[in-house]
Length: 251
Image 1 (spheres, rainbow, N blue to C red):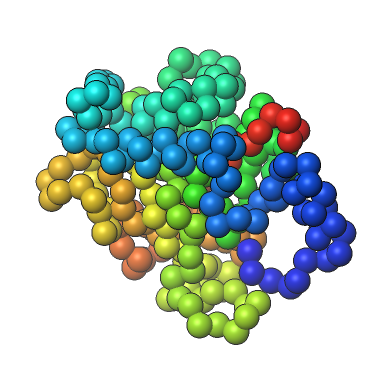
Image 2: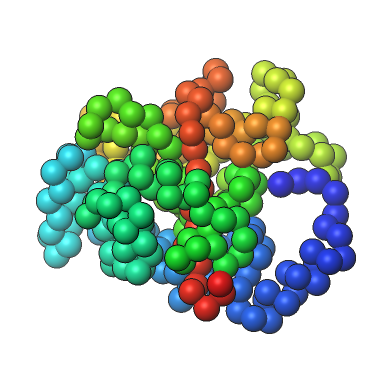
């Protein structure tokens, strides 16, 4: 997150990680092509471009050749992972005990992963929203029903502070001025029945699409609440976690 310049040991560690082929959190604007996160981002974008018939459904029906994607958010996340990083999907499956993890299981898995560069079983937890980047998953737990346990989205762009223009090195200011509360704008890919702001889905449509959400973070920069389609208000405070797929050799 924005703050004081990194200390020399941290800079040295970042340089060593780059030499070893592992990038420190938040270093590039996008993950390198060929890395797990890079493949995941590319696959998410491919599905978005390929989707011609799509609807939100808890029973997944996918026909790639016909551009048909009828599924929910966790099924979309699983599809992206199965096509781009199957070993990473398998890690979540093993931990959850479910063949198709739901949003709540993704959130629990990401929350339990270490925030070290190598992560665990190919996953690391991204501790702050300021460190998130395209190709990361963001999941939250909000158990409303058995088939609706929360939500999971794929980040399509790096989160940006809603208000710019502060002096370099100072934190962004939330519109309501709440102490320690930062507001971030995030471009996401998901499958949903309710559109976000600036949504690619036609009016009244559901399924796969991209849109803009906002997230409030706590004083440590961790995502603490989501705002579905507008920046106003405090948002829904729920357990939220960010997961990044990393290369096994970087453990």
